[in-house]
Length: 531
Ligand code: HEM
Image 1 (cartoon, protein in one colour):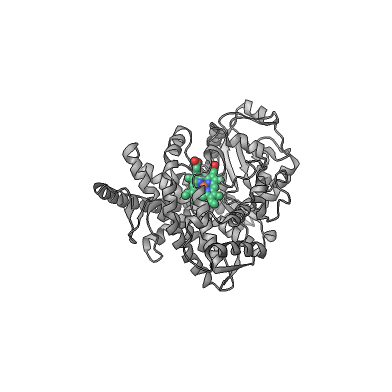
Image 2 (cartoon, protein in one colour):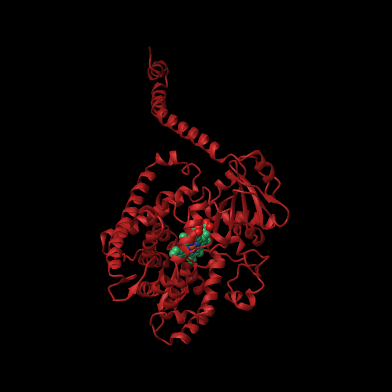
C-alpha cells in the first residue's frame, strides 16, 4: 500500500512543475497534524461552549424585546467588536448608549449581553441580593485568586463578606497611615530625581504594591531582596496574562488555554505568588501563636509601635470559624490583587488632570498649606478630615477616569426594569461605569474636569447610582475607605513637594477598558520640586 506522501510524490515527478508541487505537498503533510490539532481544539471549544453558554429559548425571546442595535442572530456584534482596536471600543459603545437611551442589549456569539450606563437601571442590578454572580468574566483570575471574595458567589460570598467586613475595620485603616506616609515619601523621592517627562504609573504602582503588601500581610517588599523582586515580577506577569485571557474568547476555554505556553508560564507565576503568600502566612501564624501565649493581640514592629494587619484579623478569625490555610491565602491574594493596580491607576489619571488644570492644582496646594504650613510632616487622621477640596478633586478624576471602568454580572434571576422591560436570567450584564459617569442625564458638560461638582451643595440632588467608582450595593468595594485614605495621603504628600505640569493631554488620550482603565499610550507628566 502507498503512503499519501508517496502518492503525491509519484504525481509530482511526472509534472514539469514537480519541484514546486513537491515543496507544497511536503508543507501540507507537515501541516496536517497542526491542522488536525487546531480542528480538534475548535471542536472542543464549540462543545464546551454549547454546554455552558447557549441560553434557554425563554431567555432568547425575552432578550430580543430589549433595545439594541440590529445584528445577525448568534454572532451578533462579536465580529464587529473583534475588528475594532481596544481603544476604539469606548467610542463604539458611546454611539450605541446615545442611540438607545443609556442601555442596550447585544448578542455576542450566542451570549445575550446587556450594557448599562443609566443610574436607574444600574440600581436595579446593584441592589439585588440575588444577582451577585460575577459569571465568567473574571474566570482568568481564578488560578491566582481561587475563590476569594472578589470571585466567590452564593452562600460562600455572603459568609465571607460578613466575616471580612469588620476585619477590614477602623483599626487596620488607622494602623496603615504610617505605612502609607512612608511609601508615598519614597515615591516623591523617586519623582524628584526624575528628569523631563516621567511616567508616574510604574513608580506609583510599586508604591501601592508596597503599601498593600505591608497592610495585608505585614511584609515589606525590599527592593534589593531577590524573593521580593520575584514576587513583584510575578504579580505583574500574572495580571497581564489574566487580561490577555479575558480578552480572547478562545483562551477563556480551560482546555485550549492549558495547551498554550502562556498557560505554563502563568502556572509558574501563580506558583511563585502562592508560595510567597504561604510563607508569609506560616511565619505570621507562628508569631501569632507566640504573641497569643503572651496574651498580646497585636504585633510589635521594628519601630516599637503595635500594629495590626489584615492577615492578623484572618488568623484571629481562624480560631472562631473553620478557616483553612487555603481560605486565608485566597483572601490575602485577593486583597493584594484588588488593592494595588486600582489605586495607582486612579492616581496616574489624577496627576494628569492636576497638570492640565493648574488653577485646580494651585487651589488644592493652598488647602495643603493651610493644613500643614510648608512642612513635609506625615499626614494624620485629623488632617484628612480637613482636605475637603482634595476630596472633590479625587472624586472628579475618578468620575472621568474610573480605575475599574466596568462591572460584570451574570443574572441568575430576571431583573424587571423601571420602564417595564425585563432583563432575563442568564444575561451577562455590563455596568459601564465609564459611560455612566459621563451620561449627560446626570452630568452637565460631562467631559469637563470640574471638582466643584462634588461640593455638598451640587451633589445633594444627584442620583446616588450616577457616581459609583467603587460599585454600590451589597457587592461594593470592601476596600473603598482604604483606597480613599491611600489616595489622599498620596496626593497630599506629592502636592506638598512637587509641582506637576501636563505632558499628556486628556483630550488626546484614548483608553482601553481592561480589568482597570488603561491609557492607549503611557501617561506622562513633568515634575519639579516645590521649593
Ligand atoms: C481606587 C481604588 C479602587 C477602586 C476604584 C475599586 C473598585 C472596585 C469595584 C468597582 C469593585 C466591584 C467589582 C465587581 O463588582 O465586579 C470592587 C470590589 C472589590 N474591591 Fe475594590 N477598588 C479599589 C481599591 C480597593 C482596595 C485598596 C482593596 C483592598 C484593600 C479592594 C478590594 C476589593 C475587593 C476584595 C472587592 C470584592 C468585593 C466583593 O465582591 O464583595 N479594592 N472594587
